[in-house]
Image 1 (cartoon, rainbow, N blue to C red):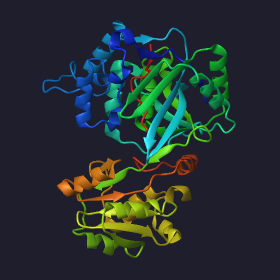
Image 2 (image 1 turned 180 degrees about the horizontal axis):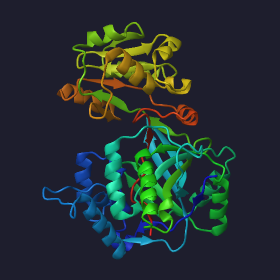
Image 3 (image 1 turned 120 degrees about the horizontal axis):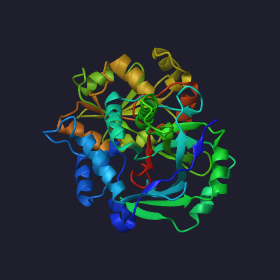
Length: 426
């Protein structure tokens, strides 16, 4: 049974923080570029960036550093009423309207608190491996602020549409927050009627939750819960984590983007070397430009295809024989895992054929293919590999099998804003 409950959210007070809350919210910390970071710091003195991604100083000490300053800033905002806690527990309906590939799309879900579950109990299912350095960073922050500052992104199945009907009814009213950031419209409503919140909690009991985004923060929250429990530093609130829940069946057509791999160091000296190494397993076709390569990949979404750019040639790679290829992948994983494009890329192309070091530090993960091409052209990276997006059905199949994908296998778009509503533990 999954326990999902309403909570008294911590929100910006418009009278003190400013009426335009678009100036105080930010994307998740892990997608913020250095230029965006500076822009957000300069935008407003109360922008949440000053807590989730502050600046280090040359003279930082164990008592005065980026994390302790974040804690003091956050605590000061709470003490001075910049951030105010709602009077009664609520679920927060969150809708995002955005444009993608020329179409206007919408995603709706709700934010609540979920009791943290250990993986392996078939209630909360992860799908991606995590990296150590981001977890250390977020643990240092959560210890200082004692709060979830941005929600984990969770998926669930609402095939009967019972929860979606409640959310849509709430969304028919005037929103508490309605802002536009980078062309994306974000709306937030409260559901604080006890009958309605109780119904949502009851409907969520038998759901399985798939983590779509926020694996690092979920694992940090589990570790923080264990530490706080051992040290008896909390009253049970750290047993819960703030999560955004979105229906993956009927209410939403989820947008998943690819995350491309840009390699810093490659053992191959030329594009022709790469083609020579993979030609027994992949069909390789040279393309005139990125547009032609992207077009070929888009037409082959049901096949295992990849793009390659080494600075001189755009090469379209298509797997010749899936059965033979899967046999070449020596990892002890499920067939669903082996059929993933990211698995074929990492464990067949990288590990078996090209001897690429697919490790932390040698791969830069980017969403924008033009950025990947630019990194190669500038000489900071040796080459780029392009993928088609992972499908939601593939994510759930792998999670249900108990396997986890390589890091950065999915990019759910748009990202959830940080700063709309927060969950303070005390």
